Amino acid sequence: MKWDFTSVFANTDALLAGAAGTLRIFAICLVLGLSLGLVVGLGRYARTWWFYLPATAFVEFFRNTPVLVQILWFYFALPMLLPFEISPLMAASLGISLNSAAFSAEIYRAGIQSIDRGQWDGARALGMRWAQAMRRIVLPQAIKRMLPALTNRAIEIFKMTTLASAVAYVELLQQGKLIASLNYNPIEAYTAVAVIFLVFLWPLVQFTYVLERRLKRDE
Amino acid sequence: MSLLRVTGLTKRFGTNEVLRSIDLEVRQGERIAILGASGSGKSSLLRCLNFMELPTAGVIELDGQPLGRERRPGERIYRESELTQVRQRIGMVFQQFNLFPHMTAVGNVMEGLRTVRRMPKPAARIRAEAELKRVGLGDKADAYPAHLSGGQKQRVAIARALAMDPEMLLFDEPTSALDPELVGEVLGVIRNLADEGRTMLLVTHELGFAYHVATRVIFLADGTIHESGTPDEVLKNPRQERTRAFLASHKQYSL
Image (tube, rainbow over all chains, first blue to last red):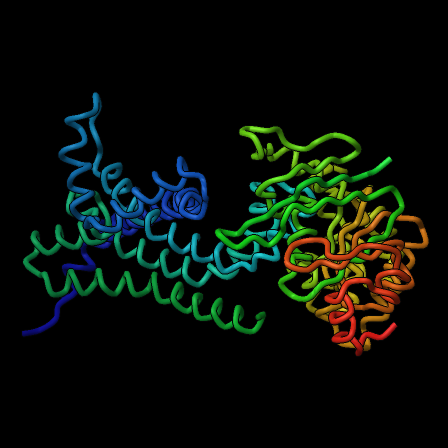
């Protein structure tokens, strides 16, 4: 057989729309996932039960169910419980964000725990409250240590966005499927999708290497 | 009038009782050296005084005001706001310095003023630079802790505590983590503070320094005050057998 990308190039518009959709849901899930993850991670670290228990339940629930199942559930089942419709973007963002929050929460917790107890002592001896010590002293140091792991999480989120195609959200894989079924060229269509992901992700992965090297140098 | 009065202070970690019903009174301007073997409870005693550790039992009064309130007989509870107030009034200096590595020297000294006292940045900076000058580090304001020697780090930590205008200072083995040649510069700074008449409690192995600077020496053993008195009484003519044994084992830190 022969590779023939003409039908893919003829659909550049569709792929661009898909790339835009991928970037949009990635941005939403990155912000939601990492910020909610911080809250949950603080809960996992906290000693007060009303913060610790819900955070732990959250992490266990979302780590132990597949993201794809969560997205399908949010899309098909959740509207039964709500007075309004759920769009494909909402369902997919919810699933991916909550799942990422659960995983990044563990990164935050481990990062916070890695900070020497003496830092807490130093902060509290000045009269800082828990939240002040966390915000001013512990988190700035912990986040720096967590950066490589959080960047890895960002890469995972980027790849997870393809799951949104399961609810027909317009993103790269969804558009690839569309092109493949219209032109009977799955080989070229999915190759194109894979190459576009590679182009987006390769620099991000290089960035984590740089971060890790810099971190080693600083410590 | 006593600045700090401790009655029946007891601290347990699980089943391990590290402080057993300690009574202690600290008057304005007193300098108390706390001696004792490792595990005698001297660090725990210090850490209970500014509530870095919560006492299991006993009452601590600051300026005649008992802290916390009794929930059940013998058991007190403390509000966080009350404890953060107390910690501003009682400064602490640690064996391992505990400087904030992501801030410069002056940033470390400003931190309490900025975050806790809400002081505007320029005023905090001026105050912090004055404190650094006082410990002889006026030229190191913008250096990060990683670029300072152990002695310099500890002096920054002292400046950081002083910036909060504490009524009392707690030193928890401030020279134990230092190379011998750096001990002197830190002791010199503490001696200056003593000469200013500051109230301080000092856990130390530097017997000579305790002898010359302290107004009172306390020897802790098994979580109780085993012997207490003037430096001459405790360090030169100890009455208790265990104090004598301890002093004999610390010959390298001679008077």
